[in-house]
Image 1 (cartoon, rainbow, N blue to C red):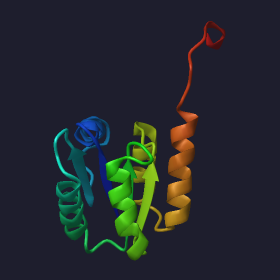
Image 2: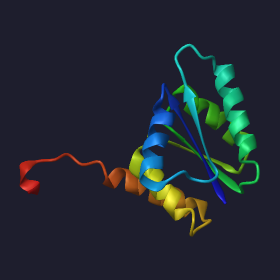
Image 3: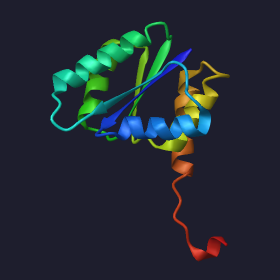
Length: 133
């Protein structure tokens, strides 16, 4: 099974997780990390280490972060450099996460899962205009 960790600033991770649970139910092999104001980088890395340990039985783990270059992203990359099981994505949005959750049930091709997740995220960014009606 492929594990998923969502990490982000403020309550990004718990917020997107709350929405996800309403839409698809509580996913298995799924963890999240909120990086709250005032928390240290060390506390974030401790949280990440704990979540990785919770998913130790997963063959691959996708860590989805909110923004490139932010502390959650940097921490995830630090671990991914030395652990080939880890794959880090930033710019996470709801369609990406839903796509990854559903597709991982039927596939263990991590590259295909990541690519389809990123495509789903891009395709769902839409600006409404009256011509769409």
